[in-house]
Structures are given as structure tokens and as C-alpha cells.
Length: 342
Image 1 (cartoon, helix red, strand yellow):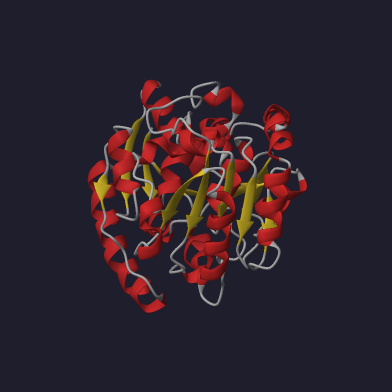
Image 2 (cartoon, helix red, strand yellow; image 1 turned 90 degrees about the vertical axis):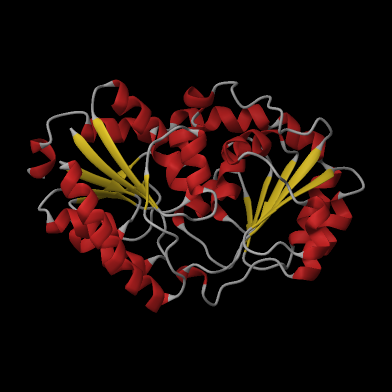
């Protein structure tokens, strides 16, 4: 099979990388196109996954629509030359639309209920949409749910084993990891997370006992630069797994930390089925605003030994879920006519 995969975010590299490696082993041909967003390109380089850079994209609704026409044209040219049999993405309108133009199947994955605008541009052009079992929206006849979470495609215990236990980028002293986001995505409009004052209070409360590491999208706040983490993008999960605590506005890292057994505090006015389920499982604590966050940090400080003892218990819990890569392999490791006849 000749499969075209479009990647628009660093997380998508992780969602699909093990699938790409396995498909290559099985003799399939993979073409990857990628948006130059954050550390996406660096991750692809570090994992030695060949790709075509489709540009940085645009922010804002109008900019994104204009970019869509350019990206569609570029992907269409690439995939015609590649002669793709099928397309795969995490909610990429470009892959979906090009697949529709070429009368080829596009399979989408999605776990973000509030990304309603983006969904209007990929769903009509897709054959199927796969989501975690806890996804709350009904996407119609094309919608299929699987018993897992997207993050377990690379963080499932059977996949990582003990491979994240040590790494040169992991500090030797106890540390906490803070993540601040840029609030530029369409679904971030009108949303909020940690106030500047709360960020300062979190750092003040934790710095007496822990080394502070901060990752921040966009321009890094000057007063926090001394805490800025500078690591290889592919080592981020080593750092999250070995952290004593995660506090942040980014949903992906908050969920990842929970799956890795690290106490996780998520602060964002946005919510989703995956986030609610991870919290219900006791893997994460979430707040819709800064209110209550400092109290939660102090609670962690007073019971950090208890949190440490629960790491193995948490990891054991997620062994019951499937590896999403197996879902992908069952779809694509066969004759492409099976996809066309969906």
C-alpha cells in the first residue's frame, strides 16, 4: 500500500510514528507531509522519518482558510506523484480534501470535541473517523470508537516498558515541570488558563523543594527564562515521566503525564471527553481557571510521598487499554480495496 500521512502538530508525530515504523517493516510505502509548527519538524528529523515540509500555516480563521487552498494544492501535487492509495491524518482538512479530489479513502482520528470549525473542513471528505471511547460528540455513521486514548499509541506500557526511566536530559535532582501555552489555536479563542500571578505563586511554592523546569509556547516570559527547559524534543516524555509533578495549560502534556504516572494538574477553561475520563480514572486533576490551583499544589507538597507510591498503581491501570497502533494496522496493513469499499 502507498499511504499518505499528513501531520499538523508535534503530537501527531507521536500518534503515528510507531505505525509508520511498523508499516515500513511490512513493506508498505509511506509519504509524510508536515506543517512546520513548534517542534514538529525537529521530531521528524530526530525519529528519522522522511517528510515534505508544507509550510508554517497561518493563525486566525481567515489566514487558515487561505492557507488551506495553498496546502491542498501542494498536497495534491505530492500525492499525485506518489500515487497514494489512501490517506491518514489527525483531523487534517488538507489530507481529507485531497483524498476526496482523488477519490481515495481518508481515515481521520480525532479526540477534540471543541474543534468544531476544523471538523467542518475534514469530516465531509473522510471515509471514517476514529475517536477514543470517551469522545462525547456524535459524528454520525462514519464515527467509530476504540477502547483507548490517542496518547497510548506511544505511551502504552507494552510500548515503552522501562525505556523512559533514564536519559541525559533528565535532571538528577527532584524537579517539577510547568507548561504554558500560546492561546493561538482557533479553539483557544476566548479561553484562558493560569494567570501570571498564579504562575508566580506556583513557582514560589515549589522552588524551595524542587528544581523548576518550564516549557512555554510563543515568546518566553522574561521573568521565567531562568527556568526555561532546553532539551531534545524527542526526550520530552523521559522528562515528564521522571518529574515529581506536572502543572500546565496544555491538554496533551497533562494527559501524557497522567499516563506516565506523574501527578498532573491541568488548568484550562476548555474541557473534553478524554480529559474528563483521565480525571475520572484518577490520573489527573483539572481546573477551569486558576482558582483552587495553589491549594492543589500545596496539597501535593504535603503528600508527595503518597503520590510517588501510586505511580505503579496508575501505570497498571492503563494496561487494560489497547494500543491505538493496532487499530491502524488492522485498517491499513491489507489490500487498499478494503478501504475503498468502506
